Image 1: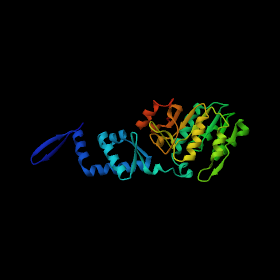
Image 2: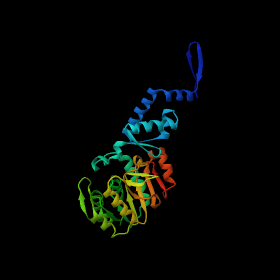
Image 3: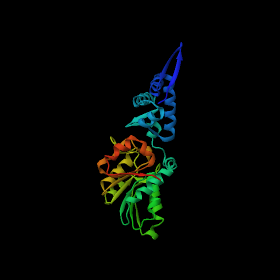
Image 4: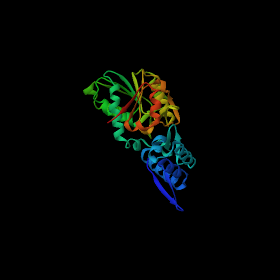
Length: 286
């Protein structure tokens, strides 16, 4: 707490920081500054939380929620549980664009997920960029059976087959041109031929209300089939996916054995909610 004396007409009054905050909340320019800062944070991180914004700006949660409502009406963002996401994250960017962002977080998640992997397991890996990062780490594990629709994962794992004794199965189907993977009915049918120990899936979003979701219908169908045909489901998702709901629901949270994310997710209220809904949450601290 700190005091500030305001002089007006020979009178003075002492304001606490709380009073100044309330004054600031009523001041239109202050709200404009907050909204400008929120836009900058969304451009950088893709998502923001009510709790973090209230703490940073020194205003109430209700004020932040009003800001987010107004910004959603302006089309600047979309509100989600506990905060908001950038409207640009609503559109899944190209694989090339996604593979070049948050590389440090994806590698940290991949390393943390390795604690769940054992030699000799049969694993489903979907076509996400985080699963591609995981494949780089899996190259050191012997005698795995990798079932994937991702051309990148298959190529990465095949490069060490002779040394590790692992086997790689590229699931059949049509090549999806905008994504380096197979897809379609043939891929779904191929998935049902196998039973895996784990499905390691990289969702577009995971939320306490929306479960695990993907943006594209065909990637959602593949992830759903992999989840159904596995003994356990592991979601590998960086902080930008936590608290986000996308279009295609593919796995309910009670089927999720583990959620692996990066340390930036600790600040998100949605992660605390998810920790009580999935088997376990693993946060990569590196």
